Image 1 (cartoon, rainbow, N blue to C red):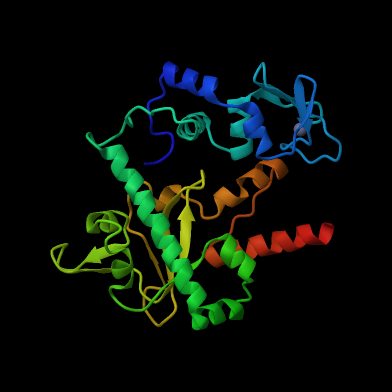
Image 2 (cartoon, helix red, strand yellow):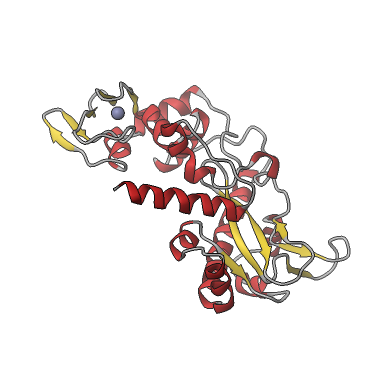
Length: 286
Ligand code: ZN
């Protein structure tokens, strides 16, 4: 399912407000020191050298004297993650074990659970592809030839779908149902869906694609052979709709918000290249 799909009830929002721990949320992004009733540290929302960020766990509020931002734990989570309110409620509810109502656009019985399985399938496939990449000297050589350092390859979780028709199918056998692999857009069938299932991605460099909230929703695969289709994507699913996705946004959005600028490029490799450029720029500054 896509984030923000759930029906936000006042009870749900209140349960999240009650459960969420502001010290816990802030503590993930900055080192806090307890000073009396409050905790203080370097502000995770702006760059600073002396601490002007303070959290009051009793009131559940934060405030920064440096950038002037303040609010409750949900607001802090939204600022840190870039999630909008419904997405923040959903993520925090899951984190604190608060049951979520059925999705408002759900397909009836079990719809929600079914989507969860697909995310599991995609994650397992991403791990499988990454492992295959580590074992594929020619693919690693290709990345080296494109001057893509291994840190960037790992940061973006690139992988390799080996040549052949049933590699992924065999690797996922017993772990996931065939229907889930098909629903995740990883396996196709010939003869209008009636024929034998086969791997959709073969001999391709795999780019995991995440939505803005950082959830894995599909893959793009670049051919490493002479396949006429240079790029193949996961088939469109509810979560994977190309028109609504911007590759790499999950990695860049905090920086975009802080700096107020964004660099938009065309292809997957361009995004990696831009990341490389930015990272080396940042390294030069220090
Ligand atoms: Zn601040």
